[in-house]
Image (tube, rainbow over all chains, first blue to last red; front, top):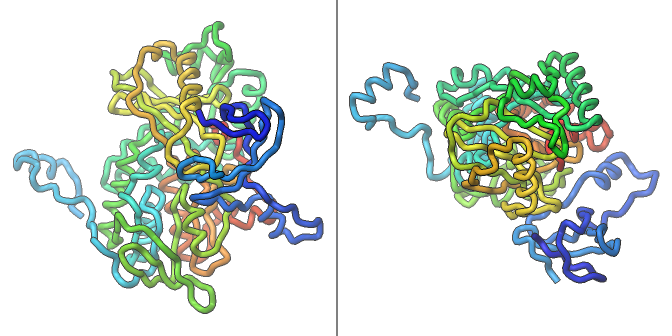
Length: 78
Length: 418
């Protein structure tokens, strides 16, 4: 099982974590177009390579944090 | 194309089966120009090429495949065919495929081993029962067969099933689609490849797309590949888990995320399991292939990945569920376990659509369940590419739905928890 480095608890098993997908999505203003909202809600980079992503140690300390991972090797990139 | 027939089989039998020949032409390199280039030589891509040639008379078509045809998710899936989705749009889409499956072997002159043995989806709690009933009623209103079975009727339909009271999640009933079943996945890819090739389609394997060329107006003007550049005005991308990567070459970002999905097969045994059984709640699905292997589908990993392997704990959970449901399989050994990369859309419905780039079309988002739709998907996507307009059946499955909010939410009917 994958070990995920929590900034507080250190490396823990992946089943302790909730995945939040691509990090850094910026919520558009309420006046933004439908296309801008559609892009924010649904469009994703989905790269084959480095992905900045969101995690939460939901069955541990509860901390939200971001990590960068190579989606081909699944290894975290420091 | 030499047609398969009993007479030909007998002739070959007497001549030592030495004259069968290749089933499709395999050009080493693409021509300089085609009317349409299909990126991705899986079932959906090959079916698209076949229907372009057959129904729309567009025969200068190339199918570009990075590996070998049917070597991606077409050869990795659990071969289940059904159309018991919830929404009316989905009923139209999946049932269109269902109708094509019935005559596909005859049409392709290739035995795809379509076997409508019934797909039974189990209910394990009050919520499951209510959801199943809702699905059954919605299906019947849409003209799709689906019926409710009591636990005893489910056991009668599938004798190995454990409906005993000792289950952690007891079987409270099941929804049965009798027209559902399985087909042989490799034969589907080979059959479409053979029939498409006979109509003039070039199938180019071991040829990766490296770029999508656009003219001054922004429209598609060609495809760059590892075997040379191809001039074309129309490109259909049917690349499953790698669709985001290919479409990124044209600067198009899609509402897709790629996840590994796992499956397993057991050692082959005598016929022991007569139908397809699926369970949403405890996350397992199982059927028996004609070779005798139990074909078992597990879930997706929790995170985006292109690794083509999944976490062992995901497969373990599914095997725990199988052992509960069919205790006699506890001593079966598993032969193989593999992963494929599936492209999940936010509403778990596929995207068959034009894009903002003129001449660029996309058929993706089939996620964990695209095999069942192979003929229908190819048929409708060919129409979309040929006419530069979607067919009425796939018009709701456009990219625009993610801007307008008219999603086709099939998260429940997609059957496996994502």
